[in-house]
Image (cartoon, rainbow, N blue to C red):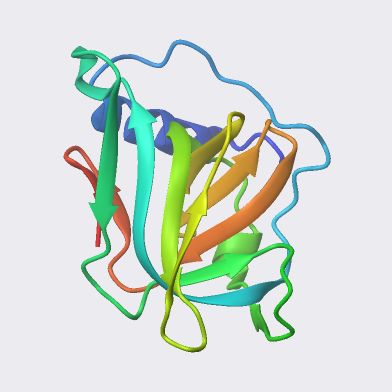
Length: 162
């Protein structure tokens, strides 16, 4: 992902508003990090969980229950499903991302309406694309694993909303 001064300024603003402290570092991802044009359709997102030290009051686990169900979609980069969906151009063309916290998991409804819980190990992190209005799950800063977008999904001072 290329450096974009305007996008970088926006990413810093979102980080500082979300976490309530100054950015400590700006980094780059491995060149292998690419947002694909298509992903496997997992189903409507139900919730996401993350660990963050936002607000400077220590590290806590947060659960965001998706408010705009079923419009918020989960797309997986690799899956056993055969149905793919197109990733919107605004997400594909994302040049800067904002770190939100360590990713703990997420839940979605499968094609049968059953809730699937994706539990994540170390190395997974949630990033926010302001331009794409999407949560991007990246492992070890090297590979995109999932993209969550749609509905009223957004990041604000109080946390993930929508």
